[in-house]
Amino acid sequence: YGSDLDIVFVYEDEDERAPEVYAAFVRKLINWLTIKTGEGDLFEIDTALRPNGNSGLLVTPFEAYSRYQQQRGSNTAWTWEHQAMTRARFVLGEESLRQRFDQVREAVITAPREVAALRNEIVSMREKVRAAHPIKGEKFDVKHSSGGMVDAEFAVQFLVLSQSAQHPELADNVGNIALLQRAEAAGLLPQGVGQRAASAYRELRRVQHNARLNEAPTQVSPPALQAEREAIQTLWAATFNPPH
Image (cartoon, rainbow, N blue to C red; front, side, top):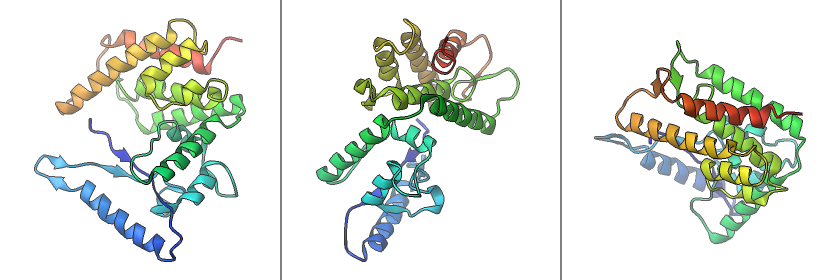
């Protein structure tokens, strides 16, 4: 509850007016989806995940999107965009386009990667996100603090991007809880670490939903949620600081 919708719009159409027509339609669609009601905004839409972010085209030809994501050409996606791809799903469009999107997503997720470099990039991005969401005092923010939901999500994204080629069950978009369980079952996490982190993530998500529904803070005072926090900190250590 309370999250925005990250949407990327693509099209397949050779008509010379296609970019103009689809861009106009998407702008109208965004206006419809973000309409203000008596209960507040219907949805919040974020289109920054499109190629080149907010400086890029609002609507992208699918072939250009495919090249961008698969590192073909001089203008290609960053690691954080591939992190987002681990959670991406096709929402609406022709069945043939859905199949092509699924193929691109699988190719991106299972592409060969230098694991140490990937680990460093994801840890660096996590540090940037943490710096952008400072927590005052000793409060524990269920999303942004060390041992919070974002730590679990980044750990899952690293496991998916680094291991899906050898463990295709991790390429399925089944959510963080199921992916943590699958990673442990595949031997990628120490026994119990994935299961405990999955349970902790479920509880943190429940607390977050409850707070948002009641317009309450998502920060708690220790020792509340200490076991959940420690479970996700253990996951982080097992994922990014494995024993040699």
